[in-house]
Image (cartoon, rainbow, N blue to C red; front, side, top):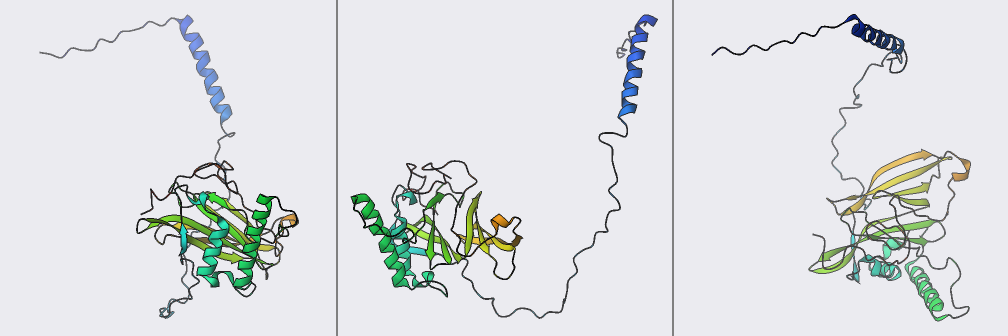
Length: 298
């Protein structure tokens, strides 16, 4: 069988119909010509610099045989005697956590500008006396403002597992501020508290961006500049590591760092007070968190 041929239907176009079409086409051509050389036009920004690869200096350097100095970035510590309740880290007393860590690791709260361990423990006792005085309504029993070295705690998910970590700050001496981060985890079917970050410096501020902790500290030898270090969770080492370190110029005179400035904290995540997940409010809110002993980390 022969295939059927497609029939082409011829349309007779009258001059009255062709005239408007020709006018529209002419107008479109004028618009296209008018648009040339305006918006969207490619413009030259000058000659492109020649791409050059990295140049390796001193390629004959001998291989490194001695290990570098260990600054203890990945050192973690299970806090003895502290068990995380089902309510998560919000149910813990930050003062007692600091006390337990100080007793287990005295060197963590001493240094060239730090205070001896007994004085730290005495100041922690001042925190408890202040809480008891406020609770009992006693007059004159509360310690002086600033006597308690423990700053307001924050509860933020820094590891990305949906559970909050406890972030604390401790003023040591008149210049240094210790920053500590604790996470709940499992050890032999018991929910324990592990310190996953420990550092100290003359801090200007502390911020949380996403799940990173950003520390700003003074620069003693470079006027007009400050150090900025970002600490991020590392799943391989199960610790917070300093992943980015930079020297940044202080733009305005009002934001110039000064030694001994008060620590502050903020977070980019929304929410405040006692929410769950990434709530950033200080103190103890009504949030319950998502972690606890019934769902330990692997």
